[in-house]
Image (cartoon, rainbow, N blue to C red):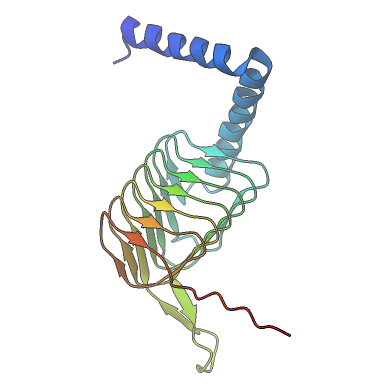
Length: 202
């Protein structure tokens, strides 16, 4: 239930933010966010049978591509998807995006079985998440090897990370920028791929 105290607190926080940023920048941010909400509503209407969502934000040139009537998307409140993100779903898959999840620019999520992203998780730019591989040895049309991706709550995923099928990332984990992740990542841990820098003289 919304009380006068909550409304007063909300107005005060908006005033403080406006004072800190300056009116012009404050206005531009919320003007942009307003249209991001409208874009989210548009895709909810476009895929009415597929998307179950609360209020969420969808940035410019970001899109959902749903290719099957059985595909399901659940988006919890105040999830924020920035610019140029592509989210593709096919087959009888399920994609769950938790509350206040942040997905940065140019991210790519491909779901054919199940991907879940926990509450308050932050995903950096250019991150790719796949719950399947292509079986190049197979003959025929169905050449997908399907799995699942489970990302816990309050996870931090750096820029340019690739997350592959059958990956489980525990709560509060940090995935270093540029990592390729497959398998289990324990909670409260930092995951990174070791790299050796070499300089060849010529």
